[in-house]
Length: 370
Image (tube, one colour):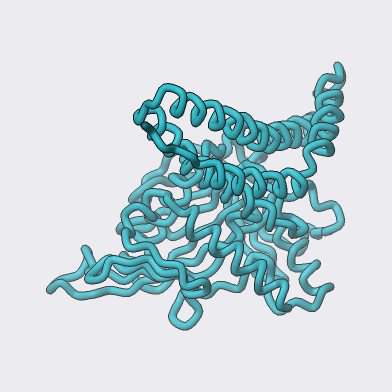
């Protein structure tokens, strides 16, 4: 006779999920969707392309958030049926299926629970991530490319849309820098804990005599903002350079000077864009990112904060937030949370949820203590 009674575990999941539903405020979410759907259905919506894009994007994000919650609710109900069926049929295979679903739901609900901790001003927005190689020569540029792939694979695992906005390839291996947008609800709040200096220690594939090499890369994360109209950028404060988009090895990938680099002279902030089709589109995209960075800087100064929201990141010794060891012990360790993964390969393949969740919980505790 099959003895299978996971009712206590299921009840614990339902209790946690009930708390999540209260924080998410499902009725308010449905009301938002109804309002945005009405706006999206207006016949003159696309007369204002910018407004239309904001409305449709907001609607898509709200619908995705609601679907995550309703899917979990349905899966919990289905799990009850599956458990009942396993016991009625005295079937171990069905019981194993229920056990697997119970474990999977535990992970999903844990992810949702972490999301409820994201209550910062910009946390629910999409994110723009910039990766820059630091000290370490070819190893550093190779490491920067490894990090870029890691985050793109993470987004792919979650089915989050990603748009690569700019890539600057190194003359040797890897990339000097890359910028990409992750367009998903709470992408900024989630990925913002990844901002900082990342350190790689390994036997260098570019050196000789099996020498261990330490290299660094900086990760910056900023929210995607609506047009930052309150940040006025005089034309005299910026320098705009145009050039041809380039690929690996410095090869040109087009025949026109469509890529744009904008330098904000008072602050030294540099933004490059090359993945849009025209110079006008690249300039507009670069200006949006520049405005966002300046807006964050302005808000920081007003709040007398010590660091920018995106972080002051030097990509060198002394300020790393995570280390990746690819020799000997084979380990990824977050130096803020103490969270460790003993298989770096799965991390570089995009399995970041444990590290990110630990980072979000650490930040929440730190904010509460402050």
